[in-house]
Picture 1 (cartoon, chains in turn orange, cyan):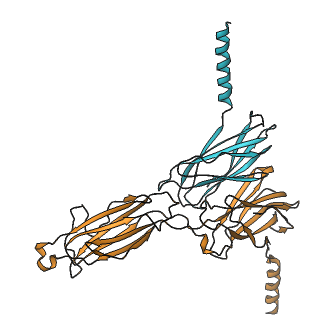
Picture 2: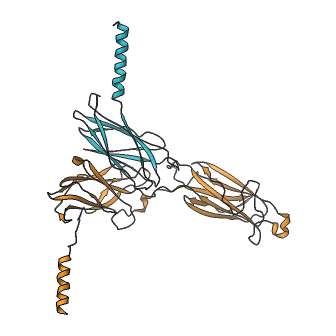
Picture 3: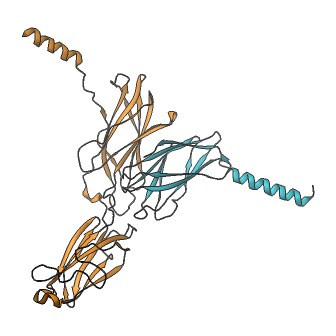
Length: 281
Length: 136
């Protein structure tokens, strides 16, 4: 038994690989100024075959999120009105108004609340039901061509615009008492593709002498480093540039970040690395 | 050769000369991932003092999205194309060239075109080469 345990211990020692600990830049910040970068130089000694790199967006401030695009929607019939509902991109909301038989108007606008810096027109679909007292359909088709329970064709609306869709929930005499509309139900779907809600960080590792480069990205919101990248360009000086993708000036674009780096030799062992700051914005 | 013919010949040679040193263009596309990054190395020949660069992003399927070019050399500059408009022309002081990083913020494929050239302080175009380093 002791011989077996000793053998296992020896085998374990032979196969043991010490963990590779990357160098860490420490917490850095990239200021709020647009189109600015931080840059660094990592000097790797003779024997280095590659530089490994990982980036962490450590920004915690939710204010950096871009305002989304959205539609303002309200149902009206005569003096009656539903609550105003905002439908952000890639989401759906339901509106109902108990107004009985007659014509309802769905009124949409992009005058306020939506991010007007995003110039892309929004697209949407609507689905309706003229429900009776038992939540059954009073009719299956309206004069505007819409069919009950079926999404309409995609419609579009630009920024600072208004649109009105009419729904005539007329009485259906064939259904007798159940032919009276009690309420109009609308499902409004904002089909607009959402913008990336937050600017994110990109790190570029390059070696101009060998015309080689690779990039790494990380998104804010967690404590995990992004994917590791390796630039296989040997010993010497590597340059690192940290940039933000922010293009919207109405928000706070400042970023906190750190990065890990290792000069690795052919045996995948870490070599001594020297980090210098070239540009700090 | 009479004077008129000499002028025509001179004009033709100038036209050809101008044509041979016009700005370079390169079209490419950024993949659907929001984090997609393309990178190029622009090399300038000996005698270069500066480089000019601009970018134009085409309309994506959902509309125009901003596409930025970050030029990395002795200094770093960024210029952005949006709403179908060419970015402002970046002038970079360089003797040898720059690294160009193309990025965007939205998860959608977008086509773009870069215009660039190297030149002397006197305005004479110098040899300019572009090498793709990363295409995502």
